[in-house]
Structures are given as C-alpha cells and as structure tokens.
Length: 208
Image 1: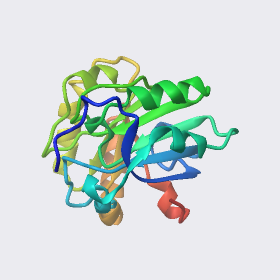
Image 2 (image 1 turned 45 degrees about the vertical axis):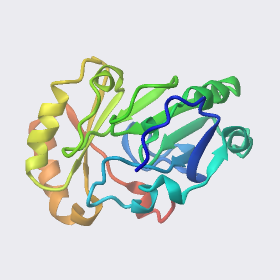
Image 3 (image 1 turned 60 degrees about the horizontal axis):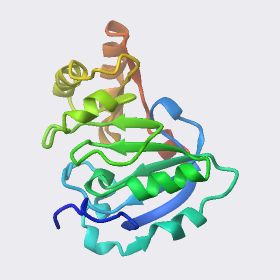
Image 4 (image 1 turned 30 degrees about the vertical axis):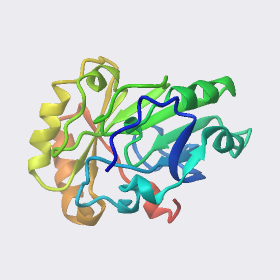
C-alpha cells in the first residue's frame, strides 16, 4: 500500500463506491444514509467482506466535490466508511458536507490520523492493528466484531481505553460465524449489560 496522503488537501480521494441505503449496524441501525466507501486499508481482516477495498490503486482518485453533488438533498446522514478512511485527509470532505447541512458519521478502525469534523464516530478496533490513542477519546460508539470467544476479552480491554463517558458499546457477530456466535453474544450481554448487540441487518435485508 502507498503511504497515507495526509499532506494533501483531500480534494481527491480513492472512492470505491457511493450509494444510498439503510444503516445496518450499531446505534443508527435502520436509518436512511448515504455511504461513501474509500479505497485503501492497512488492517486486512481475514474475514473482511469488502476485500476489494484494500488496494487504493484499484479505485480512481475522484473529485470530492463531484461526490457531494451525488447526495440526494433529502438525505441528511452521510456515512464515511472503507477500507480505512483515516488514511486520508478528511478535512475538505467533512467541511463541505457540513456546509450542505449534513450529519457526518465515520466508521473506522482508528489506525490512521485524526482529520475532519464528525458528528458521530464508530470505532471498530482490530487485534492485528490497534487504533491511534486519540480515537478512544473521540468514539461515540465502540463496535467489536466477535469471530470467536477470545474476542470478548479483547472487547473488554478495548472498552477500558475509551474515555468518552457517553460511548455506546456493541458486540457484533462476524457474518460467517453468526450462527455459532450469536448465542454466545446473547449470553455475554445478559451477564454484561453495558454491551448491546449489533447485527448486520442490511445483509438480512439483502441491501448494500
């Protein structure tokens, strides 16, 4: 992967795709949102369901202003996802989205640098590449993907690092292990009620 390009103005980003859909995960499940997926990822989870987003060279640099024009006026929530969006300078994108009165949500593993202004940050740490420290202070939502039982211990360790008192905590079964792990997550949440369950409802609905 190329080094991150935080030294640029962020007027162009390697955009993999953008689309209108329903948020399927976490606190805002069920809400209409416009998703912007940025190419490039430095984490490489073996269970990732968008591996085609990893290589930024596969996704053309796209003018941010052109993407903003694609957003329907009636949609007020923008979700910036990836890949890993924090590899890039997000100041230009978030400033101009806010100028159009949009609410901006970030989905991140937190491995890059903090840039841009967000109304909601969902931090989803991964074992093989931990977040930058600043993201633990910024997270509105901590979402841990549960692939096996050891992920419960990882979730608790990550929760101790969060300093935002209003942060919500979610456990989400990894899709390919959902039948096995959902009963385990239910039992865990029953005994540890600070956690909530997040499901990938967009997959059940067969939407992006």
